[in-house]
Image (cartoon, rainbow, N blue to C red; front, top):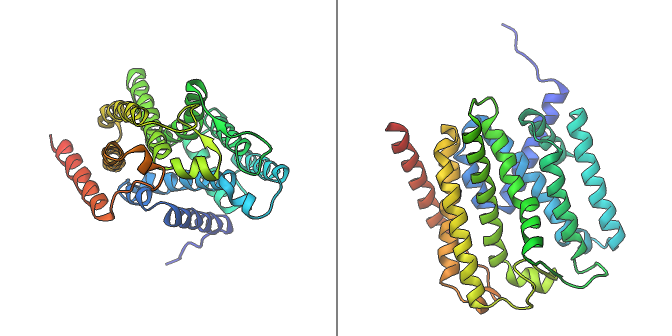
Length: 301
């Protein structure tokens, strides 16, 4: 009996995927937990998406500045990352392991420039507001906020949706509902993190994503809580349209965001400026278990 040997390309791709997995393990236990609930045909692809997004985000959130790069060199680093991502998707290979892993996913799921370019546009906006930039602090009005959230978060949800729905036959109404739900879940996630990261964003990075005022007020916090809850409700309504092997993971992520929103509601703005709201790991595990049980009951009906 002969044993098939991995090709060099296969071995390299598997190594790239392991690198992507390490990025998730280092930066997000919550996202890692949700990924483990995905069906095996989705799991690695979503990890590959997260890894690219995370590395790009770190590039513009201070890693390059702390490495001693000038403002122009930081821009050059982002340009190189963007160019290499597009090149890897075109040819199917990159010597950068994280970009290589993402390129395999993008090619398999049909993730193209309509989703990738808005993401990188938002990353470039961030770089313009970093502490090393010769600019005043970034303060986002409503239009700027929506544009930024679309690029930094909604399109990431849509990338994951591309993975979930590859090979699926669904009518236009269903696809539209799924796209809306994915966008809303991404927006909710981003708005929650804006509230969680008030101190770091304003003090270290010089950014105010939630309005043009220098300091958020408690009435603003409550308005954002209401907005986020509406976004989560829209996302929840679309979950039954997802493939069965994606629903528990998305429900788990949504439940975590809802729990964070509850905690933000109970935390004053002054407290948010001092510390980051978190959900304990034991609570996260319970939310994941309930998401699995809820999905199992849904599938039995």
